Amino acid sequence: MKNLSKPGILKFLLLAVLAVSAGLLWKHSSSAAPEEKPLIIAYGDDIAGVVLQKALEDMPVKKADIGLDSINMGDCCGSNAQFALSTGEVDVAVLCPDAVIDLAESGKQYTVLGELVYDGNVLVTRPDSPDTLSVIGYMNGRDEQRVLLEEVFGSRTVTLEPIFASALPFALENKAVDAIMLDASLAIKLNYPTQSISSGEVTTVMIARTEILSDPRLQSLIDAYNRTVEEIANEDVLVEMLCGFLETDNSEEVSAFWKTVTVQFGSLKTGTNEKS
Image 1 (cartoon, rainbow, N blue to C red):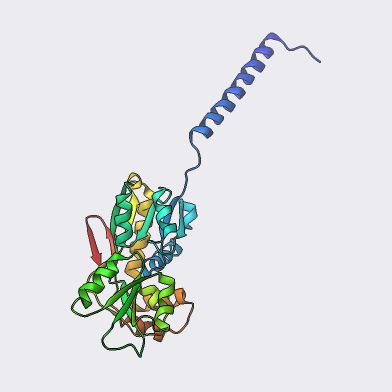
Image 2 (image 1 turned 60 degrees about the vertical axis):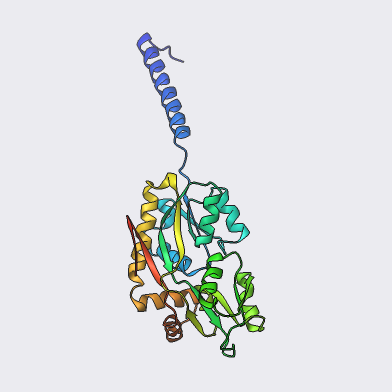
């Protein structure tokens, strides 16, 4: 091997030092800036969840590309949902008022972003249900449903039965109860008479961990949701969304159902929450 001159040796050593320094700097930068975790959005089997799913699907970019992820937690008052929320792993959640109260009592720092749905709880009866209802089933854990039923039927002799949401249609069909209280997204799946019995009652809200309020990804989610609320103010778009949710092309039947209820949607706006 040819001997290196003194200047050549110095040059070689300088290049070696630069290479090692660059390697250490890259390693430090990589460890100092780990990959950002996505914001987790939890929603339930309710009409607000249907709207949220449409908002996420209609975003101009995929939710994963901007750092968003979502999970369906079923009944937000169920044990699985309560556990997910209490662990703090969920960043944003769409909840009924009862679940929000439970979460606040757990000590977790969440902020209410706004009211999403009004009058989402609807009463479902059978065609042969008696005119004077004696027994009404409502979703287990939903105190706001029980309170509403007490307010509406308080002057009558009515027994209120808390029942798991999945079992309510079975109870109605088998005449164990005369009527049931369900979220509109569940009621629409039943071919039974349905009506709203409230006026302006808040049935669903959106919350977020207080520490992420300035996160631009949260603002992207809010913007997407607001766009969807504006779009479904058009009845044709709303019915199309519900038909997609139900996997049916019977738009006339879906439209007829929606005319029997008074469900309204709220948008998330700084300082105000407006119905549409």
